[in-house]
Length: 397
Image (cartoon, rainbow, N blue to C red; front, side):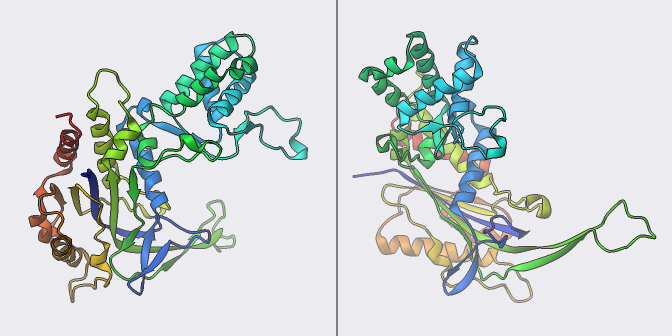
């Protein structure tokens, strides 16, 4: 059975930085090919991608992932009916979300010395991910339930309970369709993620370094103690990273359904979601210690391929770590040469890729080895070209 799978491969050099750290403040790392590599977790980059979506997509196409789902829903309830007070809206929202997702929504536990504090909105036990359309639909249902007289009696009706569950499981936002959703108390409304994002790792061996810093107390005079007001250390590394993501276009289309608008072809939401994912994957950056290091870089090279079978990561090209060029330094040129040799070799070995569409983004002379792999385009042309081909394969062009 033919499938449509999108792959994104990127090489990105990052100067001294701490993009993603563990609980001790140390930059994350991993052993690959027998040596220590820099690592940026999948979760960190997916979070950066989701944040980047807010600059590219309309809020109606996105979702909200929060434990404060009752508060988020209550805001929509009061917008629909201004006569509903805040605390009543919280209660109404909690009841509706509990019916829709099976998740208990309860006020957070308070410490004994804060029992007399202002009331707070109830929260779910874990993060819930709902689209803007799902929140709006549940808000409308909640107002309708209140208008029926008794909210509890309204939801005793099986048809109304089923409607609440159906609202929570249709018209998924782009971020839910891409990254999935797990609802532990209602597995029937789980959403399988269409996107897979690998942990980014360096193509070479990396050592972690430490920066010792001091902060001066501005209020001290010249005659006062001249010692630092504060001292500390921050750990960092620098690396040329190999990044990889795969997107199941067919699953993405299934998750999105007929889309968010009535007047558009079925392939349109898939096209928009694909274009947003490609652009935001390439341009986003985790923000760990960003004010300290200002490590705002973009990938020097990217390869985007469409396949009709399973995705293939090219990380094997770097199982043997790259080494700096004598007297020149740098890893990018060798990394590109490795990819240019590895990609056709593995595709020939497995009989795949010969007719697969491929696009290449390149910056600088060090990436010249990639020129023969596909159509070279700058990002503003590459993104719509990929989107158009995806739409064509989905039957919308």
